[in-house]
Length: 227
Image (tube, rainbow, N blue to C red; front, side, top):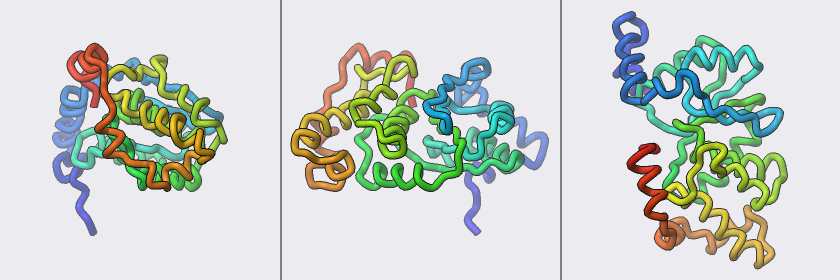
């Protein structure tokens, strides 16, 4: 059996270990900023997007009918992951890890994996990254397109400032991914899935061509320090 790296670092079976995990979570994961702010938005009747939830917030989401929690952050050796996994197990929530990044064009496998994810999880579901702005944003675009049938142009509304997404910084590469489809895939008569499966879809090439704005980068990298 594979050892859980987060639980190897944070022994939640003891009061001292649990206290150490919460202190690390509170300070190193900036969880104090999320005590009264969840950046939560129901984007459909079955899916809510949020920032990183505290265990007590997961309990409240469970009471509101949530069955599945999707962690987009990775962080398998982090305090947040240990606490979240422990809370999900205690509450009877299914926890799914689906790691995606906020400053890269997602790989073909990640995009198609997201499509499979939304076809197979139990709903209602909660999906989160750290801030609920960027990784939750791109996954919400994919959800709205693959599961709800929205066009990419319509679904891109999930990458919006109302969710705290800043497209002018390095996180704007997420918007750029979909813009490239609208510029080259859509005029060629290709669906988004067809375009992603085609040689046109070149994550490395798109990342190389993308240019972030200076002020937006200062905001996301220096002031907000987005993950």
